[in-house]
Image (cartoon, rainbow, N blue to C red; front, side):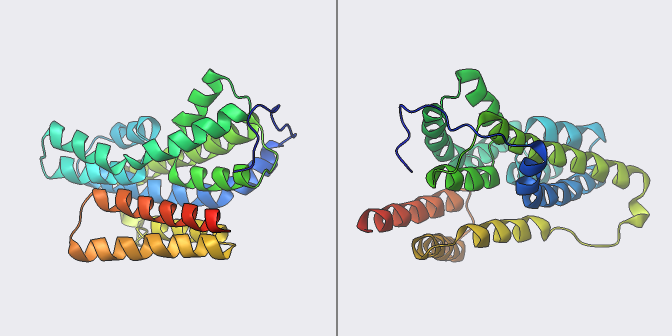
Length: 238
C-alpha cells in the first residue's frame, strides 16, 4: 500500500452513477446468489420474511447458505453459531487491513463503522486494490459501493423468497453457479500482475490440496493465509 498515513484524505467527486458502474459486476452476482438463497430458504420451509431478514442483517453468502443447511437438518443453535463464526473468521484479516487504510484516509470512527457493516470479500478485493495503487477515493465512494451491493443482496433475497412462495412453477433454471462465476470474474480482473497471479495460484493450489484431505471451515482461512503470505514475500522481493 502506498504511504498515505498522516496525509489528508484523497478527495474526488465520485458520482453515484460511476460508483454503481464499478460495483455492477458484484451487484449482478449478489442479486443472483441472493435470489437463489431466497428460493432455497422458502422451499426449505422457512417463512418468507426470514431469508429477507437474513440478507439484511447477516449479509454473508456462505454463512447464510451454511446456516440454511444446518437449520434444515435440525442442528443446534450452538453448531450454527460456531460454523458461521469459522466461515466468517477471514473477516478479521480483512478488517485489520481496511481499518488502517481507512484511518489513513481520514475517515471518522462512525464512517469506518458504516463501511465495516458492508465489508465483503468482493468489496475488500476492489477497495484494497484501489487503495494499494493510490487511486483517489472518498467515503462517499466506499460506503456507496457497499450500499449498492448490500441493496442488491436484499432485493435478490426478497424476490427469490416471493417467487418461491407464489411462482415456484416459473423457476426452470439452476442458478447456483452464480457465486462461483462472480468470484472468478473478480479474481481474473484483479490478477493484472505476475505477483498477483502467483499469489492467487498459491491460494487456489492450497485450497485444492486441503479439499482433497477433507472439507473443513478452516480450509478457506488457511488458503487465504497462504495466498497473502506468498503475495507479501513476492512484494518484498520486488
